[in-house]
Image (cartoon, rainbow, N blue to C red; front, side, top):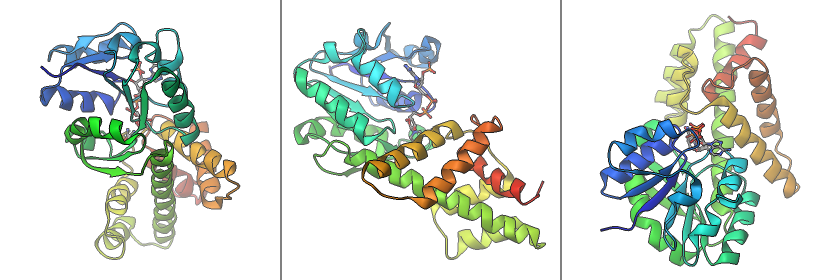
Length: 294
Ligand code: NAP
């Protein structure tokens, strides 16, 4: 019988990832702030924990997939958090997109009680999580990384190891998300330029996606932009969190990121219009609206 795995955070991503672990035969102890969201997993045999600490098996592995830095910190450090319970040789596999500085702070707290913190943010939206096709960035202690490999294989298609420095995987994830939103902004400007000059944006998106920009980001987000399909896969409010973290990380190393600053403002404008729960590709609306396009 495999040792129970703790899983904390059953949102759009976490629920699918936890479900795949159950389907692969793992016994899970799950915790979610809104307990009802755990119901599909309970029906498949998962045990419901009343607090984050109750999801932990001492010396075992606990996974978190929470929205942001504050949520991860509270689930680790508060009185009913995982830190006190995890103990010697326990592993916290932290899969949210958070700041490298938060990862380093939490790794230090774990080290003081003999447990390990691994940074393992993921590339891929909820549909990729459901299909176990996530690409996983990983950094931290090598022995701990070996122990989590079987779990990562169940949840993802490939693991990219960025070494022992805790925050490395987080920096990589932030740079990926910065690059995606830069592409969304670029496409929105290109397609709107075409539209203002009487060219059908869908035809432009087709050309981009089939020729010079034939890649997942341009094809997927290009289609969303021309179809005005902004149902949330990745919420705009979470996108603002990530571009803010990228800028904070850049500031900490004295690096100007003018493009990130521009896109950050687009996110703020979209939030001001109440678009936080739309997909983050909805920043494209800032471009078309500024150009007077309906
Ligand atoms: P989500 O659907 O908003 O789920 C967030 C989860 O965090 C929920 O379980 C929520 O609990 C929990 N949570 C939030 N604040 C909390 C707090 N203070 N204390 C305890 N629990 C708290 O987000 P998601 O889309 O699954 O994203 C999760 C992480 O993955 C984020 O860091 C995101 O940036 C990253 N990510 C997302 C995607 C994507 O496409 N969605 C792709 C790659 C990476 P409740 O259910 O009670 O609200």
